[in-house]
Length: 134
Image 1 (cartoon, rainbow, N blue to C red):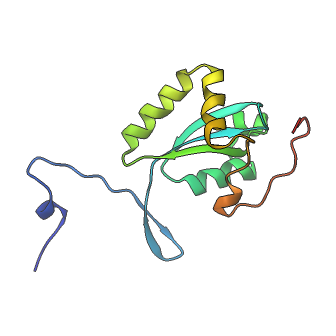
Image 2: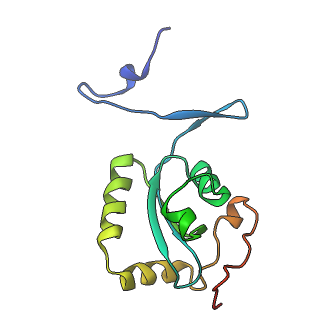
Image 3: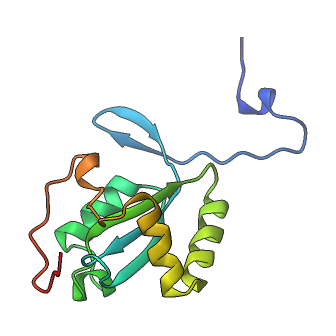
């Protein structure tokens, strides 16, 4: 029997699937919006990615040059998963337009002490930020 994705979709529908190979297994790309911080109430960075683990590795290893490496913004303090990349991009734009106080309230709603959530995802703890107050 010859079946493909088109057999399961309503006429006129389109589907995009992004995949990558991880240790020989096929893994679907999942859109995320994430917030990194240098420390509690420190510098904040908001980004979007289809590969959260890979992007975190780039930020934390210093491989990704730019704002996050210049200001030592490496701690994952908040992230949200989405079904589609266009929703994640819209949310990223929304969050970037927010006032700083609203961003802090969002982070502290689920992470009141600004703990590094990347540790829960299997990353090693980062050293204390030099100007950390907590």
